[in-house]
Image (cartoon, rainbow over all chains, first blue to last red; front, side, top):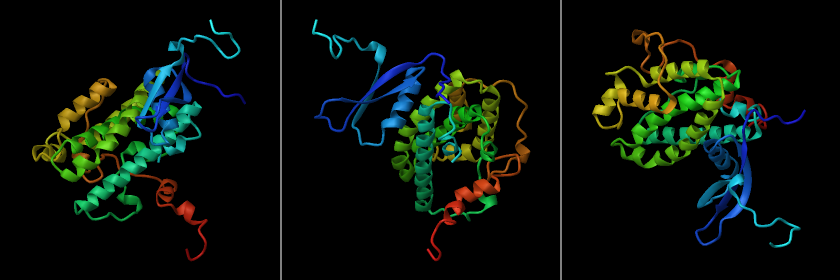
Length: 74
Length: 214
């Protein structure tokens, strides 16, 4: 049986985190949720197994892509 | 424990993970609270059926996801308000140990609020709210007494008002018969957890798999 989402209107969020203040933020995964609050709760529940000093989420729709793999730099 | 029962039954994979994580959080919170009680000189209570002072909402496993959502959105918020009142009170061991708990509960509240917006959980939420109000206790009771002594930073009216602010004002419902209130178990209705739940809490199911003599 296929996996069925109950949310009607969801968006994808990228999850970023770092373990020390000196290292850059890196993408650690993604979550799908209908709003920012649930996305925050899901990100924390899913990716909190490591000792991050910082974690943040960004709606994927807010990311402006300059070019994609295989595309020439504009 | 009720959260953990939904860790493979929630409507989405993300909600499964959140249920497991929140269940683990709350086990950790219980350990901190019991440890604090011991440090404050409160004797352990016998681990038997009648000793569990849970709200009636937790007596039986939840049959529907809406029951989970209402517990998460309403009951968890009420418990967190009491933790906040303890963390803001004048007992040092509680002031210092409960802060992390509040940070974790912030994510439980986000999860509960969001799912309350999406789910048709009104009937379950009303039951959860009623159980929460009964658990907080009557005005002029022990919670207000602790508030006057500074042990709790919030009194009954404050906690009820904050709960309304967080989860929405209560619809009209029958008045609570405080004469029947049990101040130890903090509930009005008799009963308690079932045998299966008691067995899981006591780890009896797991003990069956332990080597003999262990």
